[in-house]
Image (tube, rainbow, N blue to C red; front, side, top):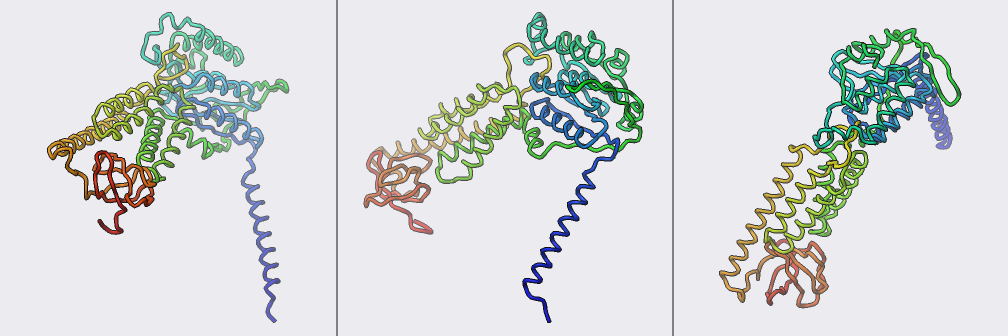
Length: 456
């Protein structure tokens, strides 16, 4: 006697429940942190709010999972002062030992990276790495001179002294990295006491730190932790997918290209309503570009000039190619790219020199300039042909055009690259994007009718 469908359903449900329970137990076992594990956080690129959030979350997760220590591998040119303060505050109040390791060989912890390394319980470097300020000039290449004595620099120098005192490091060489843009090799930093070890790789570092005691100071009080890191298991703590995306687009060139693509997409959508994809894609690109700009020291005047460029391109195409508006659009686009990350205030002692690469700016500017030039040339040819035939002659009758503004019964159509006022003589309504045939020309007004499917 065969089992009923209801019985089979109960068996399947019990089997699925058992499988889910087994998977949960296996997942929990895999998620358990081995005793004495060391969590590894990778920090590279510009220090931004994304970095601050990533470090804070990774340290909190390591503490919850029972890791004995956290290693932050550093390779950064610097970053935002606000984000740097956030990261250093997290490290100074970390509930477990944090080790900053400037690696791999050839890496650098410049500007903001120096603050992060100094704020860790233990600082180390790989051979060939360097630490300190990247350059003794400001964001625009200006000599700091007396600017180094400004309030912002003095405040940042005081921040470095406070970190040095909290971690028992010599303040003089660290303060010189702020006020004098001093930079040190791994061996120099070790000799000055800026870092505590020089290690060839992570395993070498953990072997050197084995048995070292670290004082942990939190709101709950002070305690001493002795590291047992020789041969300890390590686990990397990668960024989440969303933070990884934001970190990738938080690049001057990527941000510029996203904002430019956003402006182009919106321009195409407004010029040819109803296409949908350019408008939606452009809006997404623009939002992502502005989100990236929010993680960088961007200049909103640059954004305004880039978007103004596409408005000017729209004016150029609407007035049928006189060329002036298009040329102004190319100039506005280029100037916007140059100004997008320009900073004219007091230079920051922790911020690297950020700008849009000429290799990212020149190609799109060149393509836009070429497009404007070709459009203006075709428009001039059309006007010459019209003048040669005489104004009264119907120069567009019989041509096929596209509805740019719905005919109800009057609207606008695009014919031969020009925008015309148009109407349907029988009062018919024609939607945007539909093809029409010009049947008569009455001055600046065309009489059109819908094109037959598949041809004129």
